Amino acid sequence: MKNDAALKAAAQAAVQSLMSRLHGVRGCVVSTEDGFEVAARAQGQGSTARLSAMASSMAALGMIAGEENQLGHCANVVVEAAEGFIVMLQAQRPGLTLVISVVASREAVLDQVLYVSREAVRTLEQA
Image (cartoon, rainbow, N blue to C red; front, side, top):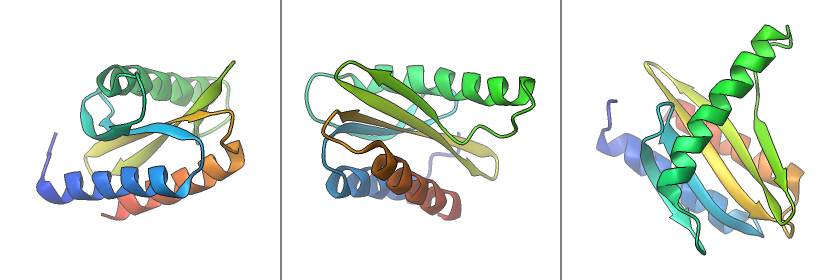
């Protein structure tokens, strides 16, 4: 991975923006498609390194499922759990795919998390 300072700064800015703009977000991770953490912030007990690894696999499964079922490009993967949800989106950069993962409690509004996360994807794709 080309892990330069500008990319890390952009990823950290995306994480900070998501955490500050969204109510109910417990954590956010930007990772490479092979599961390596680029930037992260978490409140509570979750492991950002483990989330990075899981999110890369989940995003890849979403992409394959969309293609195999002739649904097209997978825009996001959402895991809904009893106490909240996790949203995963891919940011495509030349030679590098990043995965943004947002962990939120039930206090968060899913549509808002998706909207702000998509803004972060666009920012990372242009950084």
